[in-house]
Amino acid sequence: MTPFRHWFLATLAASVVSAEQVQKSCLELPDSAAAHKEAVKDLFVTSYEAYQKYAWGHDDLLPVSESYSDGRNGWGASIADAMSTMLIMNLTEWFEQAVNYTADVDFTISNTSDTVSLFETTIRYVGGFISAYELSEKKYPVLIEKAQDLADQMVYAWVGEQSIPYGFMNFTTHQPTVATSNIAEAGTLTLEWNRLSEYTGNSTYQELAEKSVQHIINSSVPLPGMPAQGINPKTGNPVGGYVTWGGGSDSYFEYLIKYARLTNTDDNSYADAWLTAVDTSMKTLLRTSDVGNWLYLADYDDDKNIRHVGSHLACFYGGNWILGGKLASNDTMVNIGLQLTDACWNTYASTATGIGPEAFAYASNDGNYTGGAGPDPGQFAFYNAHGFYITSSDYILRPEVLESNFYAWRVTGDTKYLDNAASALSSFQDFLPTTVAYTGLNDVNDQGSTQIDDMESFWFAEVLKYLYLTFDDPTHISLDDYVFNTESHPFKAPAAKDTYGSVSPQPVPWQPFSPESTSTAPLPLVSSIPALL
Ligand SMILES: *[C@@H]1O[C@H](CO)[C@@H](O)[C@H](O)[C@H]1NC(C)=O
Ligand SMILES: *[C@@H]1O[C@H](CO)[C@@H](O)[C@H](O)[C@H]1NC(C)=O
Ligand SMILES: *[C@@H]1O[C@H](CO)[C@@H](O)[C@H](O)[C@H]1NC(C)=O
Ligand SMILES: *[C@@H]1O[C@H](CO)[C@@H](O)[C@H](O)[C@H]1NC(C)=O
Ligand SMILES: *[C@@H]1O[C@H](CO)[C@@H](O)[C@H](O)[C@H]1NC(C)=O
Ligand SMILES: *[C@@H]1O[C@H](CO)[C@@H](O)[C@H](O)[C@H]1NC(C)=O
Ligand SMILES: *[C@@H]1O[C@H](CO)[C@@H](O)[C@H](O)[C@H]1NC(C)=O
Ligand SMILES: *[C@@H]1O[C@H](CO)[C@@H](O)[C@H](O)[C@H]1NC(C)=O
Image 1 (cartoon, protein in one colour):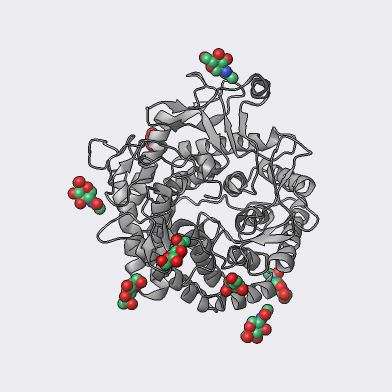
Image 2: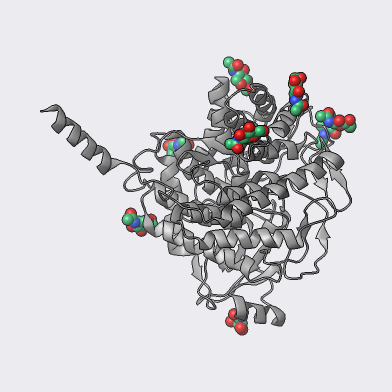
């Protein structure tokens, strides 16, 4: 073969098998983007200056009372969560200050009287430190040391030979709190603990996180690929049969495809489990509202009833299907992901403040059952105008709708997603300010709503990062180069593989579904776990 012919064939082969890019090539930002980007940075700067002044070293700023709270063990959750965003916004001096503070914190002991959450500590602190370590070109190894200090305490959540960790533990005694866990708590560790093993050279972290997810993938399920929300760490059995993409289950599904992408593992079980969950969701959970034709993913309850409910938390699903659909080269999934994103955006576009509510419901051609009270007459009018009605009216600075909107922009280049982001930014500027910073609302459908006195750390980590990146140069933190953890901390990913998952996803071995009763171990309702991401 001539060298030319060899080159030609090799080029042809490479182009035939090369993976579909996630982001649209040659995205172009309109001139207005630069000013919007600066306006988002201003929100960050104002918020962080207030945090420094009134709450430095504590977890959250209380922006109405100009005080602080310590709901994340008092280690400075806002500092940990803000670091990766600072690096993206080039706030380098504050970043150095944050590293200096963190270097002096003792993470081997809770600085409050609370137990430690495996899930929250992993996604905010461990995830935040690892992402900051990478984004600062690995110049601050202390960030890995601190992440490891935390993980070395959290390994006690796995008791004996159990595959599933407990959700909370006492750092002083190394005793976990014995209670029912959920698949989000047990299944949202792989990205962070894999990276921790890579940087420490200790494979234990990755093995524990994988063992937990593998157990869930392999357990008996109410619907193919869709495990029940509850799980008993002691027995490893499902608890109840509640299936949802919302809180308590959400990031288990999110991480299946992201873990396959971050590691490029030859083990197809993660991607296959995700593909199976999406396939089932298309067949069983997709619902179109009978007003407005908005597309939602319903819940499926213990009694096998479809619940026509949605939530801000669950609205990550649009972005997750867009990403996974691209990786699996499945346009159907991408298109559904875009429609799910549009329906979630409609919950913003429809309210008096232009900000979406915590929870909502709708009706479709199979009724309007929600598991709770049906719509009251006042909600009926709202439903007929907007194709959803509000069941929890608060906004606690959650990111998921703008997160999916960010994926939709980077993947399609449709400027309507920039318009959405600009509209949300304007609503935040109008309705969220306190005297010193920004805060949540009790009623997004009331322009005179009372405020919620808390600035969650995910305001820094997620909302402001996704908004900023929407208006930023699309090659900065490209979705082809980074995988975001569920707290929006980006991890650098290797070049993508050709495809993710098996050509025909492997069905998991059939096992009869025999959950433990819910009556002895009540599951958390979505609305009762407001801080869960
Ligand atoms: C980041 O800020 C520094 C000054 O603090 C400046 O020298 C540098 O050019 C900035 N980098 C970018 C990418 O804007
Ligand atoms: C961080 O600590 C180093 C070493 O003590 C010091 O040189 C530097 O000025 C500090 N940076 C900030 C922003 O506080
Ligand atoms: C921990 O709590 C004490 C008060 O209980 C406080 O003085 C200290 O600054 C807190 N933070 C750290 C990192 O120790
Ligand atoms: C952790 O255990 C110690 C020692 O038994 C106890 O004093 C403390 O109250 C426990 N903390 C929590 C949050 O249960
Ligand atoms: C790896 O980490 C685990 C969990 O903290 C620990 O028990 C083990 O001793 C570590 N292994 C090595 C070789 O340091
Ligand atoms: C999955 O379940 C099958 C059948 O029960 C079992 O043989 C296999 O070892 C399990 N695999 C994992 C990773 O748990
Ligand atoms: C995309 O995924 C759906 C759901 O699993 C499947 O029915 C469809 O055949 C897939 N399309 C392609 C082109 O693979
Ligand atoms: C909900 O279903 C009930 C019973 O079928 C029906 O009377 C009611 O009009 C429905 N409400 C909405 C908003 O669709």
